[in-house]
Structure formats: C-alpha cells, structure tokens
Length: 181
Image 1 (cartoon, one colour):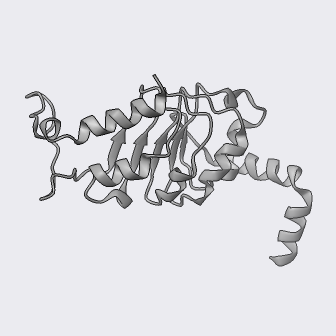
Image 2 (tube, rainbow, N blue to C red):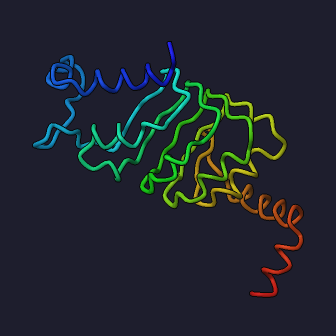
Image 3 (cartoon, one colour):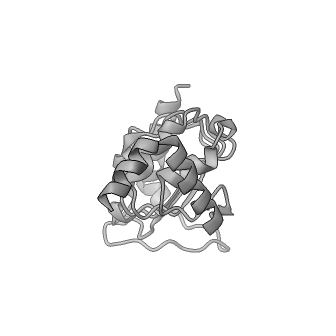
C-alpha cells in the first residue's frame, strides 16, 4: 500500500464522526474539544506510522485542532521520513520535535528548522545523520535555542566548543562579524 495513501486514509478515519464521538477508555485522559469538536491540544503524535511524506500535515492539523498554529509538540518518530518537509517550518510555535528512528541522511536537512524560534527539544537519534562528524555541534550551531538534543541537555561547555568549532569552520564569517562588533 502506498504510504501516503495510508496516511491520508488514517487521517480520514480519525475525522469521521463515529471515531470522534467514541469515548476513550476510562483510564485515558479525556481530551477537551471546542464547539466544532476540534481538539484543544497542542500535541500531535504520529509516531510508528510508516509516514514518508508530510505534504498533508497542514490540512490534518487544521482539521483536528482548534488552534493549529499553536501546535507545540509533534512526534514523528519511527516513520520513514528522509527529508525535513517545509511544512514543519510553518509551525512557528513548535517547541518539541521528535524525528528519531527515521531515515534522515543529510545534516543540511536540519538547517531548515533554524526558522523555528521556539524549538528547544529535538530528537534525531536512530537516523543516519547521527554518524556524521560534528553532528551535535552542527545541531547546536544551527538551532541556537535548542536545549535538548536526543534527550540529552545541551551544556554551556558544548555551546562554547560549538562557537569555537564554527569559527574554525567559517573563518571569514567570524572575521567579518568581529569587524561589525
């Protein structure tokens, strides 16, 4: 089965009235909804779904959530994502992004997330990029507000070492910046 079709069918199933009107098991926390029956949540977990394409994510989030622009936690772990889709860069309130256990191969994919000012936790372990030299330094340099990478805190010492690493990597850039200062 085409993975995108499966993703679309799964979303359609969630949106049907009979699923939305189902009562969760008694032990589960009941999710609050607005008058349109949209969820009043800031969390979306799509982990373990064989997702490889996020092209329908904006429509899905808009259909499910009362305030789709306020999505703060997105779990896309253990899917088949190879590229960071531009749709993720539209989630300006995103604070936690789980992408571990996917197929992201290039560190440059992470650069796309630099436009997310509130992103403070990201997971990418279990992706091929973790074997890249300077993986963690690249993430710290690219995502300056990040506080946790792969469930491990970013330390002050790591930030200082990353600053030195950046200067060695881009000597022209650091020279031009010091002239401006």
